[in-house]
Amino acid sequence: MSGLNASLGYFVAIVIFAALVRTLLRKWPRFSFISEFASSFMLVACWLEVQTIVEVGQWAGALGPDVAVTMLFGLLLTHGVICGAASGNPSLVVQKFLQLEASTLHTLLAVTAQFAGAHLALLAAVYYWKLELTDMHMIKNLMAAECSTSLLVSVLQGFFTEFVCAFILHLIYLSLQRRSALIRVPLIAVLLTFFTHTARGYTSAYMNPSLAYGLTFHCSGFTFTQYAVVYWLGPLTGMTLALLLYMGHIPRIFAKNLLYFQKTRFRVPKGEKAEKKKKK
Image (cartoon, rainbow, N blue to C red):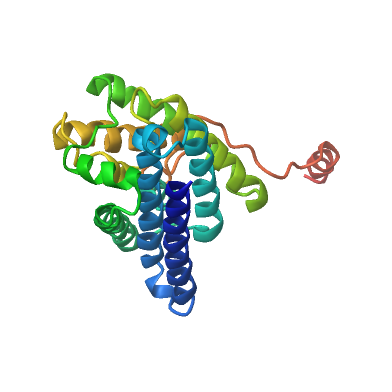
């Protein structure tokens, strides 16, 4: 129970930090990209603790898999509520860029902020583990130098897993983007939790390049390029295909709809057409 209390305290501290940053930035809209830094920091820092519970919680803190899944869902739900439009996911930022909803400069700043937040979150988590507040964190501190990779299959299988999961996620996200947050946020949290739990034996289905960078890129087993192919190229390819299928084209690249015929919104009644012919 002490391990769970320490983890909950850690989560609360990270959430308060992200909420404070988001509140302060409301006064300076031009620096809104920094909210992506806080969003990514919160997501990666808390997910690292969930990962700790998954790896050693069951036999060092009496915390079973059900606790880890529950805390992961709680994290994703809280993240969606606190961070709002700041997703902390480079794939979603690039998606807005391709939809002509974000400029090139804002996209570059946002993606850079997300990776900076992920890196700082990793440093913060390592510092937290070094405090060794519980047996679980003491063991995690000993394991930190030789962490276990989340990629448990070949690069090709990993790419396909991230691609398929990201494709489904972005397709559902696009269909829900105009819905109320009361519907969208819980559904996305449930979907992310399901994918992550289901794909635990493959890639853990992060579907988020900065999240994967903070969670598994520093672990041995694969090269940086191999990780990038799976966790960066896979989600971005899935996102691009989902956007193409949903909209029929990619606005940033193709102005013309490639898949669907666009019908005129207003039709002239047949009676009016007949009258115009008689007048002629």
